[in-house]
Length: 177
Image 1 (cartoon, rainbow, N blue to C red):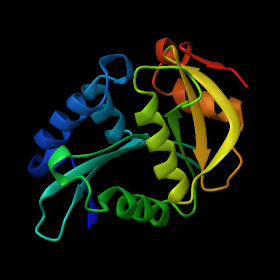
Image 2 (cartoon, helix red, strand yellow; image 1 turned 120 degrees about the vertical axis):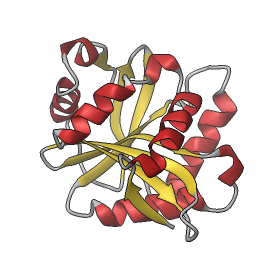
Image 3 (tube, one colour; image 1 turned 135 degrees about the vertical axis):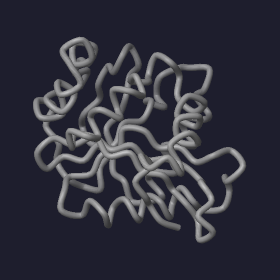
């Protein structure tokens, strides 16, 4: 398993397709914006590929100073249950070992139609070494919990990361606790 830049045409269409399929419209940034921000060095778009170079998933990172946000992470439906998610997290942790690596998950404590999925998702990240922080945010109207590999993240720097995507996006983020 390896992580490769997805902007070469080889994986871009599969990546975009999975991105549109895996994430609700309300949670997606325009894909063209992500591509532009990758050129600016603010975002890194990675394809997860296996030994045969078969596309297995995506990881889209966003950066601010020494912060590395796993902004979007998905494994292709036909590639699931092979340990790809855990392997990819290990690869990402190693790739960004000099940064404070973190991600957001939908808060499983909130009643929702996908509550069981939220509980499974959090359990997956905890099994893979991630730890909840004290940060809970309202991100585009969804209560999200911040997880890290143990590093401290301050709300102000977290918010500044989002300011890079524009005021309209940053204004949709609020600290809950």
